[in-house]
Length: 476
Image (cartoon, rainbow, N blue to C red; front, side):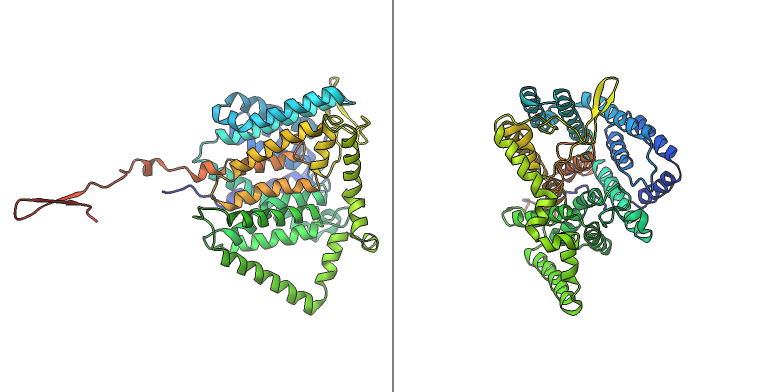
């Protein structure tokens, strides 16, 4: 059966993306025009809505040294999301409901627990509504894209992401632009951690393609995989490194239990490639003595943390917040302390209000398991686990292991950056990629009309024998 395939990159889209970045760097007004056009494009259809959301989010969280910030961009970005939701939600069908009902269940549970416990109820409800509508719109939109067009849309996402990644590497030529406050590469995004978690799913996708897919990886795919790994290292985003490694390792592990391995590489080849990479690293470490120092620098980020030890470094980066969230959960184990808020109801980064309605109240929570426990208790956590399992089941329906790896990497970044529950912010990028992953099976099962029109079996040949009998059978 002929299947639709996805290309890793479209060179015309890459060129157009590069030109777009150059134009955005010229004036902040260009960003306003582009995001305004995205709002109009979102009205056209589901594919355009998804592309508009991707472009808008990248511009909103762009490096201010490259794309000058403009207050109108933030306002228009929210408009793009609203337009996409209004355009896509009425397109819902029965198949979509089977995919999004866990999102609405989680939203209902979070609204209930927030009504009971939240110290800032209006903000909690605003975030519940944003999460429910934005996440649902993404999955519905991918579900409404015709399966024969999905590969083209997937290629578009991959191309834009890899182009942004490559241009981020170019910013190393000017350290004052490309290097963030903690010394990591931030490239085109506003901070190194953001760039790291942006690259991680695509790194997992490309590495899985090199290691795990049956067909031979092309040179471009190998270079992309290596480049993504190097750039994650340069961002110093440990969360991204964990997400990529965890995703590839988990997919490699689960493939051992799979009964059908049509698109999977032999295990021996995967292990041979991994062993070769490990041997190269050991040789570099033995001959230069720099590898261990570089890894230590990546793990600790600075000499002061290295002197304190790994435990102290973890506590300063994420451990302290995780411990506080756990204690807050113990204070209210069933209902939590309110969705998307701190237990004291304060917001250090402030609250953005429009027409008397709160539209933004950023918080920083790094570890998804304790964050959801703190905010919604065991009730909300149970609903979240159900949602993740349903999404994972859909992602595992595709035989293409690269999309499985991308999905797991999107989840893995939540070990250090809790973006799963924030599709109204930079978490929207992760939801777009998860949407592509959980609907990828639709493209893999598409059979072109010309192939469907072929007869299932060729007519048997009939040969008349000299004695008057007839011999029937396949002409082959």
